Each structure stands twice: as C-alpha cells, then as structure tokens.
Image (cartoon, rainbow, N blue to C red):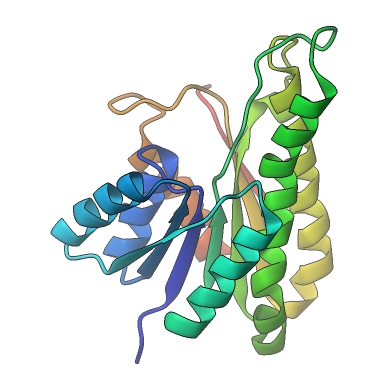
Length: 218
C-alpha cells in the first residue's frame, strides 16, 4: 500500500517545515511547492535525513498556470493528494490610506486566490472518493485587523471566509476543510514554534470535527 500523500504549497523553513515533519513522521509522502529551487533542495535534504520521503516542485503561488501545471505534475508523477496544505503568503506593509491597489490585489492573489486554485486542483478526486483534507495557514489579523497590516488583514479575512464556505460546501462529501489561525510571530523555541503549531494542523486532520483552531496564548 502506497503512503498517503500531502502537498504543501508555499513550503519554507517556518510553519510548513513543522507541518512537513509532523506529517512525514506519521507515514506521509511529501510534495513541497515553492518558488526557489535552493530552498526546496535544502528542505528536501533535511527531511530525507529524518527518513521522510519528500520531493520538491518549483511553483509560483501568484500564478494560476504555475499552480495548475504543478498539480498536474504531482498527479502524473506521484499520485492523487490526500491532504493539501496551503501556506503561501504575501504581505505589503502599509496603512490603508497609503496602500497601493495593485499591492493589495497582488497580496490577495497569493493569500486567497492561490488557495482557491490549489484546492480546485485536488477537489474532483476528493469528491469522487468522498475523502480528503484541505488546510490553510491563517492569521489572527483576520479577527483583529491592524492598520499597518491592512493588506494582510484583508487577505487573512478572505482566507478565513474561504475556509468556512468551502467547508460548508464540501462536508457532505466527507472532505475536511480547516484553518489554523495563528496569533503571534512564528519563532522556534517559543509558544509559536513551528513544530508546536504543526500539532494543530495534525489535530484538524485527525479529528475532522473543527473548521478552525485559534492558535494563541491565553
């Protein structure tokens, strides 16, 4: 029996690396998508040192064609994903009075549209087999917007609403859609350590009874 397959879009050394280690150590085969080959190669090497099967594909979350091509390659070379984790993000720092409309749209394209397009690439097979999991990396700016982070606040609110609307649509098909809404700065060795945050992603995958985990200090 082949190992289940998880695809992580927006792979990097932070949250997604923790997720990769968590799922990989539980028998998943990993496909990491990122823009830079050097980063992918380093991540793959680190995972393979832990005896985790992992592969990398170069893809740009801001380009729908790039994402579609990447998922076509995944299906052709590795099989149908069981889990999708969307972790790509873009954040223009500026107050709304000075925020450029183009920057806002570019951020929204990565943070929300990329999540939607990636999800659409795995949904037909998930719906057909009535099983699958889609997880998004959210942020507390969706609930507590900050002026200087107006673009990310708007985008994270959009991503959170995408999560809930997709969950409403897809739950009858046995598909889990959830988000971990992170309420702090990700940093190893703290409450916001990537490996600790990854436990919340795993909880959403295992329990399948939640749409959101608010990951914050009380």
